[in-house]
Length: 331
Image 1: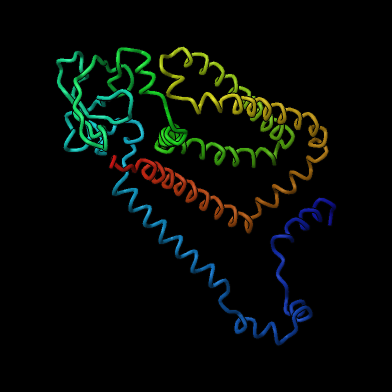
Image 2: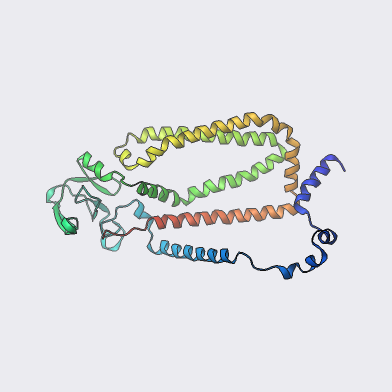
């Protein structure tokens, strides 16, 4: 047997080792081997009960997400009674949100933004001791999303400013989790490219590995550059700073991580490229073992599980967005 064939057999033996009777008896004893099916019993009963409880809780959350959730609540105005402006039956013809009192966050749904004080009066339960209080309208305009904001820019900033990190995070995650096509692309690209690189590793392992490291490093660097360019443009948009404080705070860290990761990938590539050339034969032997018909069954099973996993991730993302959108009206 040649050295290469022996190496291939050594790799395959790691996957296909099956003890014969003599080997099994020499380790366990004949009686233990013969009675192995009778001595097996259920283990981790407590963990099984815990797992079933988790499944029940997940089923309850899933039901709540479907029955009570609406991802539009993460971005569209909601009045102080918890009704989604422009969508719930009582306010279907009132798609805009208006703050009768610009100094609190109570919203009333309106069909058009009030322009003058003669455009009506609005009543909110924000008086002393929670009593209702009526106020005249003030000049506003629809200058951001579905909100009627004061023409006074300082008051507009006061209303639109994000006062909770959770609010901005939920809005951002809601946009991401409901972008099923985007998530699918993010999950599918490495899934598909892994097959391409697997084949490339067999024929051109050094070039394939170099290409993988290089593309990853360049992509991370480009992400950092694009983040810089996007932020320089968005900072010039009115009210952007007030509506995205968390993004502005986290931006330097994400950008630095992208640049640093890109540098590390290039560094690792430069340090290991000579070793890759020497490991050419090892790459081919390992990939040849994977291409064995017996091993391919395991590979295709893993592929099927990966597809199921991608579908499950998409499902969970949609349900999480629905759960985050469940809110209660002011009491």
